[in-house]
Length: 109
Length: 119
Image 1: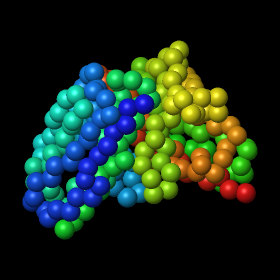
Image 2: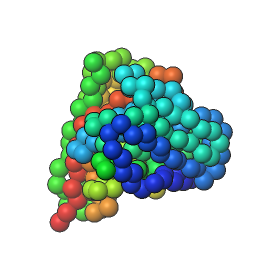
Image 3: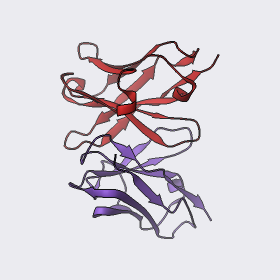
Image 4: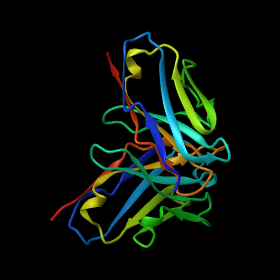
């Protein structure tokens, strides 16, 4: 099973700041089957990024994804008030099972 | 717009069974793969199972094999998850999710249905 480790566990930022969230895989992902999701309290997750760097439909361009192999990054260029949430990375193609990271909580500083 | 509505959750005693449903609308359900994912209280996301668009291939988290069965009825635009021998560790919100057409990511999610296993 591929284990995804996200860091930091909690990221404290002020609106307008840049946010960088990391996701490290326990083995190389042979294809860019890496996604990022946002989840707000009491809501279902929402797809932000797929294939490591492709924005899902309707996702603002302040969200961007990058990386390959074992190291992936979600960047929020300028954090907006509505961005405070938990973010999960997920791998879904290199091998089963599909796995999620443990999440990074983005909180208001 | 894409809508997924889960149902079938509730409070159930340990050892019992439950069938969850996910009613899909707003897209052509018959051509998309689907998933089930759960989230225990205060915890992260856990993928459970997936099914091909036509139901011919199903895949599961190893630890769920035998107790969980994913299925679909394309004539009813509905996805199912049968869970047998429920234990307290199965207490969670259960989400169905739609597979993205060009990828394996989950591009639409239901609001979830809560399963509480308690005596």
